[in-house]
Image 1 (tube, rainbow, N blue to C red):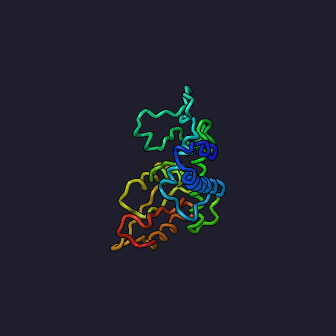
Image 2 (cartoon, rainbow, N blue to C red):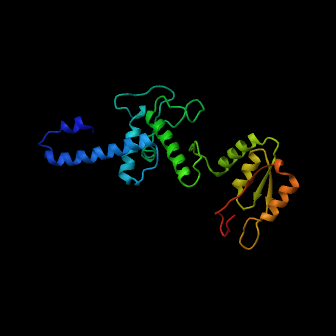
Image 3 (tube, helix red, strand yellow):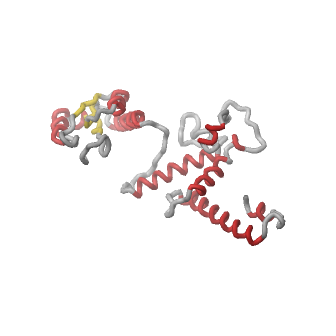
Length: 232
């Protein structure tokens, strides 16, 4: 509700002084959302869950599938048959991007477009704050481990087209291995050093010297997972 709506509430429904206090809180919520959209940075103070859900709901109502007086008939309309799915996704149904480009605006979903761009900006701000201030762009996409690693390897290979090997600090987990194969590269598995399963840096140096740095696309490690492990 905006100021005009609140001012139109009859006094016999709620005392005016109570309504004034409630409106002050609403103004503060709107101010926080406005600041978030303007700065596109993580708030200095975290939001409570009701505030987060309020913001998400406001954005969802900007999508055409949630318009109160419209029934979309096009083939690209967002429709949700299962109410459980609708609640799970906070009434969003259009997705992001357009015509294969994830960063393009979604014509029928202003709220989804804002949500996607805002999410990317917040992730970029987070990356900068944890020690990578030079990060220029970030994009969040719904990919699992293997597909993410595969796409990353393809991106690296684009700038190192002569390289065909990936030195992989072995872990008994298939996603890493499959992603190398799917990227069209050749994995070189290097066993970890016992008893702590630490990366065998001597073995890595040996393989780099044998194969040549130009022939190696990258080194794929798994720091801080698959315990017990020591830091790389």
